[in-house]
Image 1 (cartoon, rainbow, N blue to C red):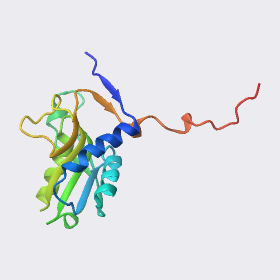
Image 2: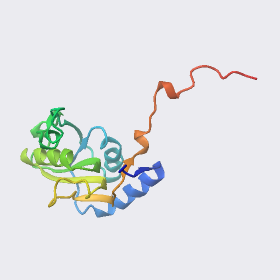
Image 3: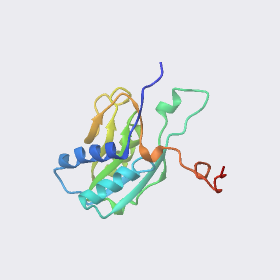
Length: 170
């Protein structure tokens, strides 16, 4: 059975971010945005919340191709991550676009917390139907979904989509 897809507009993203902002009852001293999906919503939230210290985390979950189950059991590979000194003793908001399986944001939040931060997770969409964590969910989220969300920053853009030559005139 094919998963339902939902393509969002920038206006819908704005509405979802507007729904998130009143949920925050604390000020955050830093933000860790998960690359790549968390960069855009994280930037919008940082501007709205006045968070100055913006950090990036990039995570990969390698797996053995011959064992499908292995990808769910794999340990995360942190490709890029803030130094512990950047988060220790601080209230840190960890931002991603969506909580699907929950592996990525859970791994990042856990590592930030293990560095000595008071870490909170935040996503635009929470998909509890795909989550691998029955007892965990994001601290903050805008909407619950069962769909595969396509955000406006994920729409294919590239040099092949740009008209490079003058159009032929009739």
